[in-house]
Amino acid sequence: MALHFLLLLLFAVSFVAADEEPFIGVNIGTDLSDMPHPTQVVALLKAQQIRHVRLYDADQAMLLALAKTGIQVVVTVPNEEILAIGQSNSTAANWVSRNVVAHYPATNITAICVGSEVLTTLPNAAKVLVSAIKYIHSALVASNLDRQVKVSTPLSSSIILDSFPPSQAFFNRSLNPVLVPLLDFLQSTGSYLMLNIYPYYDYMQSNGVIPLDYALFKSLPPNKEAVDSNTLLHYTNVFDAMVDAAYFAIAFLNYTNIPVVVTESGWPSKGGSNEPDATVDNANTYNSNLIKHVFNKTGTPKHPGIAVSTYIYELYNEDMKPGPLSEKNWGLFDANGTPIYILHLTESGAVLANDTSNNTFCIAKDGADPKMLQAALDWACGPGKVECSPLLQGQPCYEPDNVIAHANYAFDTYYHKMGKTPDACDFNGVATISTSDPSHGSCLFPGR
Image (cartoon, rainbow, N blue to C red; front, side, top):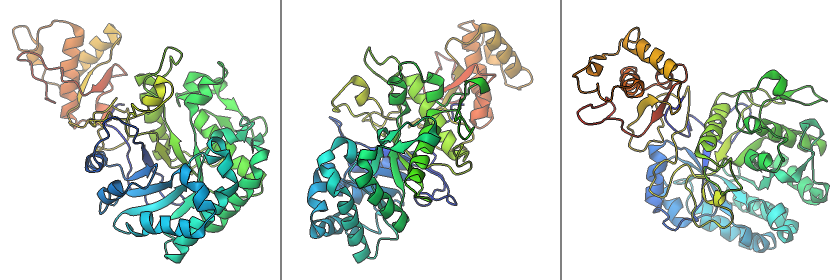
């Protein structure tokens, strides 16, 4: 249920390998009219126990603020610098010296993204992309940092063609002159394929072929699962299907043992009139289920038990982003560090409320069936052993005398009595965690 929030970046050590703990990270975009100071950003990361971040540049102030925090940092060579770096070993060496060597090891830089979606957004730089990657890597070798800092480049999942069934997937063949030497480099250096996966866009562009529940990781009846007719593997969500499509596309080019890290994935919480599924509820559902999926270590149908570490897009809503309304609303927090929604996480331990005040309450869900609420209220005040005397006539929480108000009090009291664990705010699905204090008048709730 809705425990706390977010990114349980527990115990993750390094980028990813089959024998390492999977992690959830977060992307930090900066297209905000009121971008928080780097020290504020780091304070939010610490409060949320976010242990992995990806920057879209190598901002010096941010790298200094991240020093001595232990947070694992991915820095990025901006797309506009790739042409210069791809044509000059010394330019690459200067970039590494200024943005990595100058900060490491105080700032725990673990990887460098050379550009982002270069093949699809900046095709004129594609011809020097692998050269840029190799020059950056050579500079790391010269500084004896190539084992600590991996090099790769995030790719758009759109370069994978015929992605369903996954077993038939292959990379756009026109990109093979770049992809083959890229995969060769990744395999020889023990790096990973970085992939941006957006089930939201896959769903939007499918003209109704992809069900919303399949995009959101919601439970599907077996007859609604997608089946790969070649492997007979069953797929319950778009994310896994895209990851496996990437594995099969890599294998199609005769490469093996190149792990996948998802460098971007998320769901917008708000959109224009033509984006009806960009909602807070869907964004919460997607990101909550994604986090649980990674930490459950279920892996994918092709590679069960090997979870794919993922960076959620993104930390903040970016109000200066061009494009449709949804582009400005992928964030988990606003510029003030206030959560856009409280993620619904189970089995996450008693850490990581994305409620930055750390005050959470258990209340009745909007639209919950009154009979189920009454049954849950009766249970809480009976077998649940909640002290419900404040709900009696003449007592502080009697008014308003309705099942919702009384359930709110009983649910919240039980939730706090049980240590605010996620399972303590379920009540057969009629309760939810909120950051809004339901106290009123002299009726004070335990979480206040």
